[in-house]
Image 1: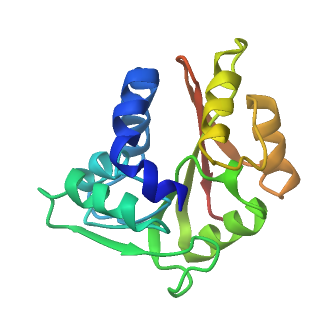
Image 2 (image 1 turned 90 degrees about the horizontal axis):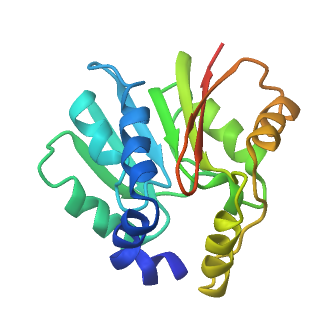
Length: 199
């Protein structure tokens, strides 16, 4: 699996290429977390966001499909005793409805065959009144982002779609989500953080 192969260098690559956004992303997501929250993070990757969530919540379950990435999450979160790390498929989560106060899935929608179904699954496990937090890298006005995408594609990453802010907003509107708050983190490769409050 490509993500197992790149897990050991992923944080270094992101920090060198897009460090300002990479760090601010974790901080921005963590701002949504409260002390008593039970949090599920899907597609946690190396734990780059997890390490910001963990000190802010009651308990974090950090999941990913890649065992290599989960090993990196374990390293990044080793000082926190409120983190459970496990392998999971975010499109078929094996947990009950309405379990988590916050559900996070970062930088994964563009890789999925059925991203709307994935968002619905995240919504299913989120409590009523809870928040689904979905950050995704978007294209800015420069061609730098497209170059980075091309490099990832050459490494074997398969992008199903690529978003700009307007198309990211339209994705959620078309999926039936009308009340979505967006925060854009600007940098070499900007990131849009979508926050859906479950009605």
